[in-house]
Image (cartoon, rainbow, N blue to C red):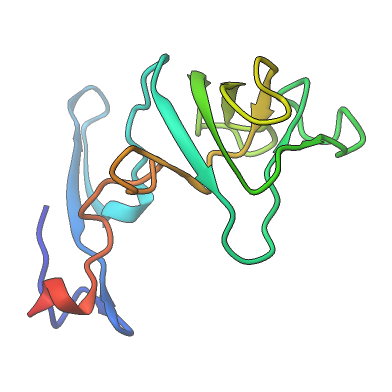
Length: 138
C-alpha cells in the first residue's frame, strides 16, 4: 500500500493505492484500496445502525428482484452473524446472515453488506486504512 498526500487526495480525504500481483495471470496493476473487499469469514458478528434514511432489508433469496424487491424491514439497529459473504456478483445480495436480535431474531436471509460494521465501528466491507481522513493525513 502507498499513500501520497498530494497524488492520492480526493477532496478532504486520502485514498491510498495498492499494488495487485496475480502471478497465475501474469497481472500486475494498481487500484484504490477502497476498491478491494476483505474476506469476511462465516461466523463473524456484524452490527448495523441506521444513519440517515437508509433501510436494512432481509430477503429470502440472493437473487435481486426474485422476491419482488420486498424484504423484511429490519429496523434501525441490529446485529447479525455472517453465513456467507460474496461481493463478486452484481445482480445478487452479497451478505447471507442470521439476525441475532430485534423483531426478526433467528431469521436468516440475504441483504447488502453496505452499512455493516465490526465491533470497532469500522465498515466491515472495506479495509481500515482505505479512507484516510484529514486528521490522519497530517
